[in-house]
Structure formats: structure tokens, C-alpha cells
Length: 180
Image (tube, rainbow, N blue to C red; front, side, top):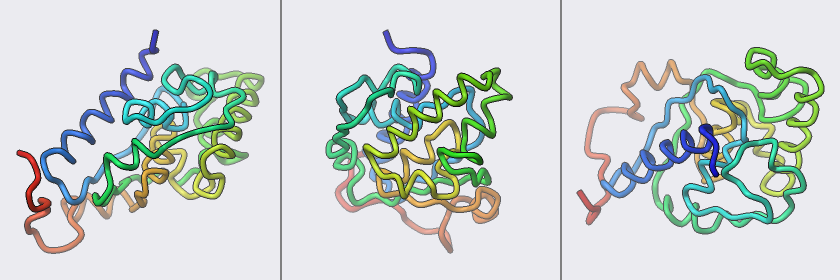
């Protein structure tokens, strides 16, 4: 049974898909804190990603992940600019990664931090290790990483907020022929 954290990720995926299906050309996702860290695997699973391990049950279950297929998830957002708006600049893994930085706040002891970060390293190796090291990849429990894997990019959350989430002057950001 999917955990509470994976249901939250599914809700995030549902909102993303709703925007895409409504014809959004650009989707700005505001990322902050999270009570979980699954490296964004739950969100990607909800969008159709698959792997040789379950992606929708939490980061600790990413142990041994080696084969990941993101093609369905990427196809769903093809042609849509995805923006991760966050002031969290931590990478997904490592000494300054999401687990080491935010794990203690969430009650993870040192042993669990080491285990989870190792499984997230495996997840990064199976998907894109370079993106896992990008600033913001560790935002919102790794949703930043998931959005980067979908082809998105990160912007400062405060700067995006000052512009109302828009890249410039207000205008239509709906794709021609999109569903309402």
C-alpha cells in the first residue's frame, strides 16, 4: 500500500497534470519543505515512471534501483515548460544534500540518514547523477529533482513570486488546441 508521502506526491502529480491538460505552456511549481524525502520518485511514479523497484513507497525502498524508465512521465509534460520555484538550493544527495540537511529536523538518526542518502545516490545513478547535484534538486523531499528529470529548470522562489510566476509581462500561457 502506498504511504502517506506517496499519496502527497500523487496529489502533486495530479495538479501538474491538471495544469498540463488545461493547456498550460508553463507550470510553476512552488517548492518548500517536506516531511519526506523520496527523491521525487513518488511524483514520477504517479506520472507513469517505472523501475525495477517500487517508486511510490518512499525513499528507503529505492535500495537497489538500477533500471528506471521515465519515458511515459516525460511524454505527459512534453512541450510544457516546468519551473521549480524554490529558495532551497540543496542538492539531492551528499554532505549538503536533502537528507543530511533536513533529515535531523524530520527525526532521522545518523544511521538512517546514511542509509537513505545511499539509496538516493542509487536513484540518482539510475536516472541522472548530474541533475541530482544541481541546486534545488533536494527541495521538497526531492520533488526538485523530479522536476529537473522531467526537463524542468529551477528559479529563485522569491524572484518568481515577485513576478507572479510569469517570465515577463502578463499574457496568454495556454497552448493552442489544449483542453479546458
